[in-house]
Length: 75
Image (cartoon, rainbow, N blue to C red; front, side, top):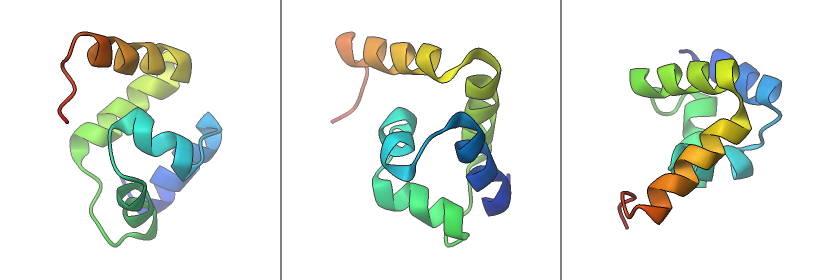
């Protein structure tokens, strides 16, 4: 996934960097670095974004919240 594709995907999903970062489990700066091309976008992230586009942001949010509730999220 290129930075242009990443920005376009966030736009299609209606996500700002502020909203995308916690959904993706990363720092706000990381999302901005992916968007600018400063950092490479990991292939698993591209797959996750494709999943979110297919099944919806709300389902992805539910999954993230479930991980938090199950104690699977790292501190």
